[in-house]
Image (cartoon, rainbow, N blue to C red):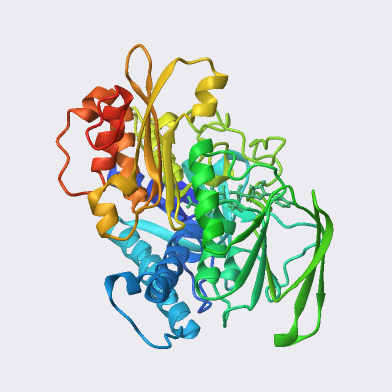
Length: 478
Ligand code: NAD
């Protein structure tokens, strides 16, 4: 006999654990199933984000940033250190401890909220029956009045560069190199390629990034991409645009493995030899083995679970959230969808505002934005005014030796309503939320300009940029 729950959540990643906890808070009997194992072979909740994504990459970004600053920035403060070294094993160990702390934290949150975890692989059948193949081989059956699918996503593999977990890796492998590769090639100058490429570059690797598209970070505001490309190249990241990779051949064995990567760009065909190849060309919705015949849930042409604007699949009581459905593959988008669906099930007005989802790339400098880019506003024929302010003129940024980058505020030309905020610079992953808040509350550039900002702070660059929309910035010529 299948055990009956009010809500069965498939997947305990960002979207799934938010859905499960919120549903439990609202008084429902909830089960949450996850198949993932941690590096120690034990079940690990939290999904890609906590195990092999957002959190571990930020741990390594921080470690490598400290090392880079010690070598290249501390001198400006008058601090010198002779012959600094990086202990990669210790750095990776610190990252693993953080992952363990946070994946264990989800298990504790489930306990505190009385969410029942199941550890194994779930398949959805007709009538909201969920069969779970547990790690010991046994099977349990659950039924939910509602089922929320939050199955996440997997790395896309290129047919000519299959992952071998050693020389050709995805983000998971690139978090666990045992030493700094002398030469690293990355396919894809997207979020993962830039973040993990930066980690190993800062630790001393020669890094070549091969991007198929002719434009760098086409999704970001063009001015932001331009400054970012300039800063990354200054750091020594060798970014090749319009580069079509055709072959990746592994030679040698064990530690002597090398990869010959062949690509063509406007200069012609070239083959480079590297120690490691990171393939970071995007992710695809995870749906393999998830849906049994008769579940009624449909997939889109791109293999995502088909849902309406409320994350409903069209099958009575079956919902889907996070990376496995349309929209950006961002943990925080999944958080919001998970909460919204739990609230909709409880009869509350759950809602996600897709117009105010922030984007962040945790490079040095960081990139962050919310709302429309200038390119989008032009394409859509929306009249706008733009105000920007460079961090080089912000006292706090200069005091921190972080003068690179700027803030740009885009506001409607007639109503002054903020339509977008684009930032590149230090700590902009935090600053962008000032734009998110303003847009969420339908605020204007003038509202932002009239809000008192602490001095000295990086946030003053937003203040000045907002004033610059009306050509009244104080700390620069308008
Ligand atoms: P991405 O979509 O950000 O970037 C992939 C890049 O690879 C693109 O620029 C694309 O043009 C390029 N590309 C595709 N095929 C190629 C080919 N054959 N040769 C060369 N280039 C090719 O994908 P990603 O970096 O793999 O990240 C996957 C997902 O994870 C993204 O949706 C991202 O939003 C998410 N993520 C987010 C963060 C963050 O928010 N900071 C961090 C990591 C990952």
